Image 1 (cartoon, one colour):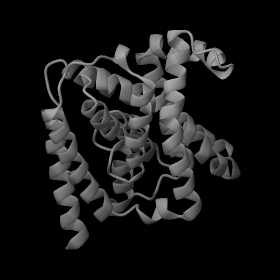
Image 2 (cartoon, rainbow, N blue to C red; image 1 turned 30 degrees about the vertical axis):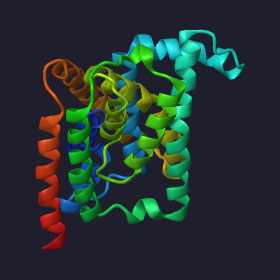
Image 3 (cartoon, rainbow, N blue to C red; image 1 turned 90 degrees about the horizontal axis):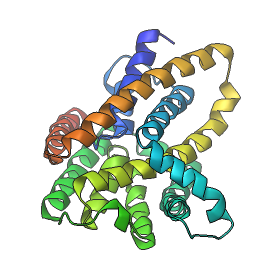
Image 4 (cartoon, one colour; image 1 turned 180 degrees about the vertical axis):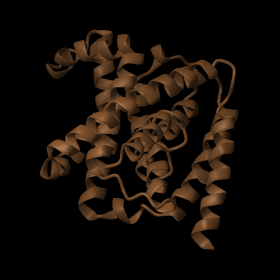
Length: 267
């Protein structure tokens, strides 16, 4: 696989994974609107591993707390902040894991990978994000996250299985609807991405193992490194901008891209 192609895939994945603009939608478009072939599952998984490393590093204290609380959670002792965080993140991941598995085994996940679906999802879920963001209060903080909130946001997250929706965008929408501030809504959405990326990566890896070879492993390692740095940059910039800027610029981008995609799909 050409180095430029690996670089392009990794940068797109890294920059868009945590922005509310849909990384999967952009990666599907790369092979749909350019002469470049589909990058394949191995590179997809590697790029996701890179973004996983970025979010864990950026939110290291929270990730460490949840990891340390995992053993207590598994033994039924939900008596520390870490154990509660581990429980909430686990519960938030269950709905999308089940739905993702069902879509994969039924073949519906591949059926939805079209320019028209991505275009409509870009527009509709972008407008939904703007509408909820503008109407919601900004009073609740991450420390007020409850078990019920985690389940509700987990259900919102299942909509991200529609290409073009954006996992971060739809979970942020759910958090804003629950009254969390913009920065705390984004932080909760990013923390939810950790077990979700792990779960989706594990599912995809079952197929990757069958085609693995030394050359592919090398390409995957390069993709992981590039996506790590791109994701870390995008994440840092978004979290900083949210202190003074709403999600409107991302929504405008989504709508413009969505309209262009629908024009391509129906022309």
